[in-house]
Length: 339
Image (cartoon, rainbow, N blue to C red; front, top):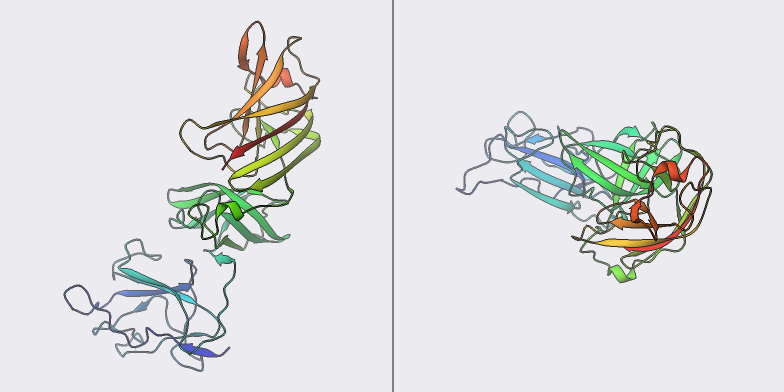
């Protein structure tokens, strides 16, 4: 592939006192990501730079032996440069400065994609994976996601992003599941908040999701089975309108005394304090509760599940529990909520 010279070639990196950043590390990544990318020392692309490149005593990108060295990058590829102290980790956690979306000089072939490549993911299960470093800023809740799997591309929405020693990402998949062949994860160019496109222009046609019945553990791994398990939704601006059909055939090992949660909604609800959205159970059958009772439900702030309640004229409102739903319960639920 043809090479274009990076505009930072030959640059002298200086600290606030005007002294060279001797020994500092210059990391080079794919634009908008923390995925390392190969650059070369010559226009022929015959000799690769180390990554990070270590600055020489003059604070210039070096060849590893003290001499200054040009940086060449592939034509049509934009990069991100991150300058970090010599003592920083890989990837850096205390960067001095960074520059993103840097094209080679006179490169007219760079194109913009709606998906931005992220670090290499490590598969956990059908709805989650981990990333090296703290990636919660880029991989944040409600951002759209595209992953490459053995089964092909899976499109998802992030419902949880948490960093400890790794960043753990949990998603709701539009259809299909992540698999052990997971090899790449890219996030949408648009953030979930403060979008460059007005939220009132973000409208989806009829999409599908897969609702489930859960107990307080919020787990789908309790042996639940269904004869019918369908969810449909449309997003208009910041609201999700949905319809759910669930015909249960077994509750597996779900806790009988736990409140019923109908989970895996398309997106988490807004985290606005004290927000709650009510839903409607338009039809239900095979329940085990007092005649004259009715089932209601709410979606609390930040949740991606519905909590169901039992209302009757004598006792008022109490949790609708799994023993009342029973192993053959039928639910038809509709509603809408803010995201």
